Length: 149
Length: 149
DNA sequence: CACACTATGTTGCAAATGCAACAACAAGGC
DNA sequence: GCCTTGTTGTTGCATTTGCAACATAGTGTG
Image (tube, rainbow over all chains, first blue to last red; front, side, top):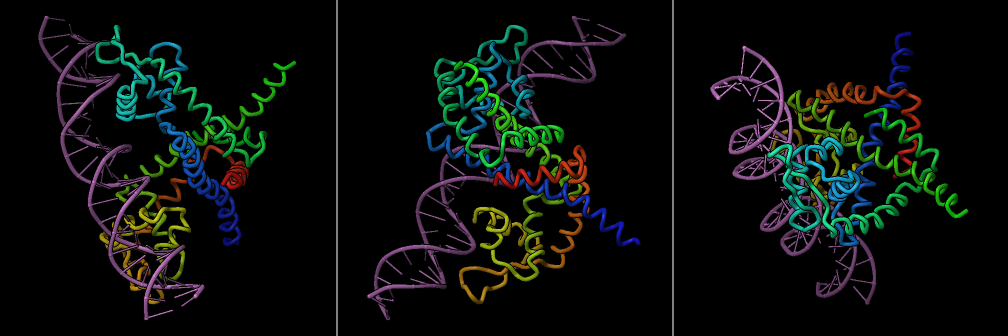
């Protein structure tokens, strides 16, 4: 019967829909929790941390363009985030010898210290918000999510 | 040895961390894709849709406060979203007999039509962004995510 | 070299956001 | 009744965001 086929299709699509709903609801919720922890410790937010992390991790001065690619951020977002971090003395812009348009970004001593201090709050905050699931579930979660990207 | 224990702990925490990273990266990415589909069709974004959906689904006029609870939104966000929808003629505010502060929100005919039209774009857009995983994976994904909330 | 084209980064502007303060009302105790 | 406390919804303000335009510089082609 036609009805049975439609019902079957509906059930099949339902899981994808439920997952979509859960994804859009849970991700911002957890982010808010972690951001709140950083805020309560007097630190910048996750967006700033990810910039500090990426520069630190690069091991050598890195260009804003590469930061954008690495962190999936639009140029203007990188540009303004960097501006704030430079104003706060966490990052310095070096002249880029290969391309007079760009800069090379480097952490200051203060910037490196800040990132480490933030990590000491960030790390347990992640563990905390993720504590509801087991490690093997987390592994599955990561695998499935990455396939969606 | 001490080192072995530390390594073991690190590996254990790694999955949670990977899942956290994936979650924060993939959720906004997919949302952006779906929002783009709605935009290209000339429709409001997902935030507006969720309001329309919640009012429609309630079956009876509903108060902004209840919308906030249902959609996990702060009051001011509901307030402004509603303002826009009222200005656009999609929603009307009725006087609330039980509480002179609040209103009862109702979709106009145009609002109902808009929600349906948006759903015709939204539904396949979800199916599209979720098409990378199987239905059973989606079921697991939803289950695990909901446990994090 | 001159030219068109692409890439990088910044900025003006309008819209959206978050916060805190606010007005208006409800609920409950006395 | 009156007063205190909590709730609901809105708004002023400063900050942030997204878009598009822009300036500047690299890239490639003839």
